[in-house]
Length: 82
Image (cartoon, rainbow, N blue to C red; front, top):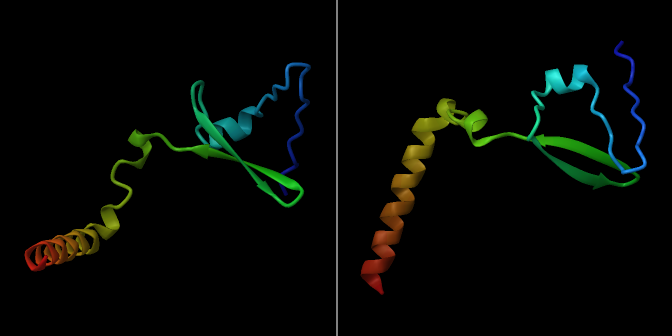
């Protein structure tokens, strides 16, 4: 069982992210974090960079290409009918 990490909020409202979590979630200086309120909790979610997202759709590229072709065909058909 992993022990929970505890951080203290400074007088300037800053919090240090524990090293183990920074490493695990690849949070580096300049990384963006989004805060999401969920009931009485606050979720801190790292925002991936564009470089980190490169190739993420590789497993679904065939389906995505086909969907793009169908959408393009529909738009051309609609443009011709108007």
